[in-house]
Length: 183
Image (cartoon, rainbow, N blue to C red; front, side):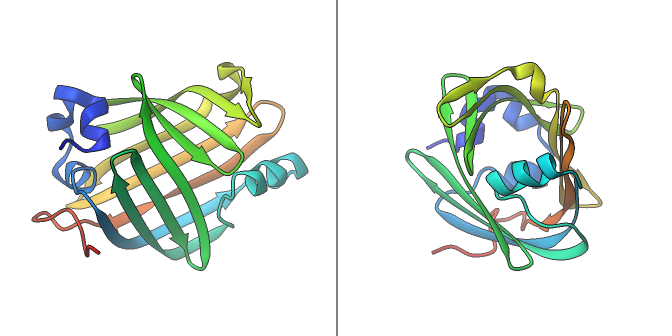
């Protein structure tokens, strides 16, 4: 059975760097560990949006543990930034990757090019309402490989609200199985 990301990316999945491909190929439950830094917006609206989507607090350096549990319907991701849990559910709907994060559901178009896996926002819904996609032009996510490590970067800013979050870091992803452990 093809993984969620392999189904969405089709033939371009093979063009991903080995570490990115390994993270998104494994089935079942797998766990990864690494480090991340997180910066957050400071305005009141920014903090409210961060709370609604359960974004992690700011830190210059923290351990990050990621558990990805794949099943027939999609994947559940639990990201632990230190002690702060950020959970989301991902699934395929037509040609988009859907991710439910707190009160928001995002629709991402995935693309693989120039050694990057890019996530581009196409749709956002919150509390059942579809929000204008243009509001989310400041939301960018990518995955890559640098010095043999899986790397991630997520940046989100909204009009009138400003910066919500910027987090980046790395995870150790074994080449042979794509996971540190299974259960």
